[in-house]
Image (cartoon, rainbow, N blue to C red; front, side, top):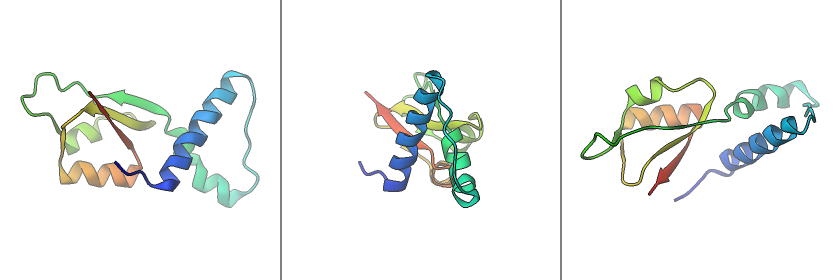
Length: 102
């Protein structure tokens, strides 16, 4: 499995910010350019698991991806799930992490 370095940095940063918020610390962005680039990726901290227990062969579709909450940054799916091309487009466009669960 591979992960884009920028995506990894965004995921780690989002988790750090989430933990800092729990501790009452507010993180601020020093420049407008960085604020615009960071705003959406840092907001996508929600993780959603998609139940595919009724599928013989689990398939992640565009419809699944369109139903996700706007703040979803990670989708958990069963190991061996087939991801349709349209679902892949949305994953790439929204920079959503996919985690395979055994």
